[in-house]
Image 1: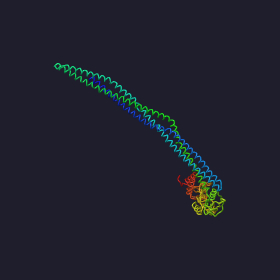
Image 2: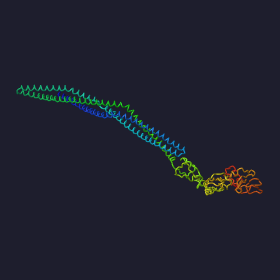
Image 3: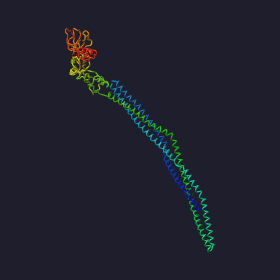
Image 4: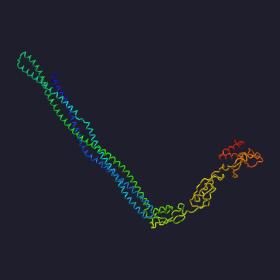
Length: 567
């Protein structure tokens, strides 16, 4: 490769490299310019919102104050409603303490007036609660707008911080400029090669003009022709100088153009960042007020809960007042005599007294049933008639119901006694009595109260005492049979009394003076004779059932002596 070719190649490479860097810088400058333009547009919109932030913060404070005022109104309405409710209910007590219907009607009228005032307080409380809710909502809406504006600035700031500041593009442009600064010397050197070729070409041309045609000149001409060809090649190579100069000039122009473009983009970006800094500063100035606005917003929302509790107190007071007023109107606003016919005397007196009336009584007919005994048979004035001026209502009162004779049930079984008592129009009640005096008397009526033949009212109760089971152990307890050896105390069914007898199957032996096994001995004396085996068997089981185990064991031993029982 010739020197001219080397120079041309170096110049072209420098130009191409510079052009590549310049194009990259151009793209970067255009990007920076577009970002600056977008940033300015975004900040323009934010500026409008920031202009409203101060107003929004003022609105939050105002809405919080409105919520406090409304909540205070609800609290005052609740307190006044409780006072009015107490006044209304206290009037009920006052009305009960007077017997004058006129005064009672006046008291009820006062209660109704209080209740109308209370209704106004309820309406005030409802309106106040609605105002608290609305103010809290407005405060939250305004505060959300404030937060949104401040957050938008923060996001824009983050985006701006992530953008290239242009220094890298500036470095690349400087590198392109440095590369281009090396091209002029190469162009100059390439120009010298061109001048040399031109000079040689001129000299050759002159020499040829001086030579004549001869063999020598022909030979010389051939050499000269070769030299000319070489010179022509050099000239062609040197002719590339124009192209390299054009490349350098174009690249230099691009450097100037892109430099201006980059400078303009960086200026735009700087201006946009300046606006951003102003917006950030404005945002920072609102931070403390935004914290206060957050507390005001949360406070307004808490006032909803507080006002709700006041509203519940107000409603409770209103409900209590309504209850007391309804009670008073039911009790005291009646302008006619209440109906007390068929009611018990005490109940009728209470109803008339609560209406400011007095009752006087007259004896009436016997009651047609036990339920109506001493109940009001009739009244004067009748129910629904105007209240008499003297405030007195005459009550005719039933007497007792017709009397009945208590039947005799002593000695009857429980079922028979019940049938006899209920058949007589009375009520039977049973209680447990003592143990029966004999087996025959077990579970029979041993007493009744009232006694047979007593006159009592229909539906009254006759108490019947039922004896328990016959207690053999108790009936024979304390009987001393020691005078007759071997005998034990037993209940004699025939005589209905306790006796000392030989336990069956033993018998009494007068000769031995004791109970012995076997047939009846001669010269025997009481106790009475019976089948000893049966006696012993009966005695054993009676003693066993009476839980007299030791005596039952003795009877069993006697039976063994007789040989009639196994051990």
